[in-house]
Image 1 (cartoon, rainbow, N blue to C red):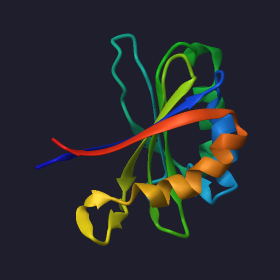
Image 2: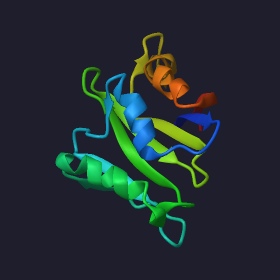
Image 3: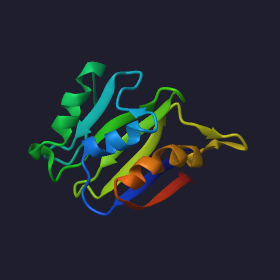
Length: 145
């Protein structure tokens, strides 16, 4: 059985990859994960192709994801908390007022139900920075498919 796990964040107005990454960095999150930096932008057919690049290119990648060529397109970037050794993927929807997080790198599990994700742990480490960036609310789910 598989699971769908994500947190959908809604902001007051459009956000940038740069502003969200800066907010999350205050809580120990970084775009650099064990494989480098994973990122994607939507192509003409609406598909996302994830690629990994060297860790030293994070500033250029974030600038590219925020560039005019990606306005109106879905883009994504990995985030990782080095201290906790966990992370996932952030997807910025086309209007940039909605951002979705999927814990996919060494996903933290609930001690009482190991098949489920410890979503409170992620929220505790993400909400302070995101709230300061204009967060209106969020919807979290961990559902068996």
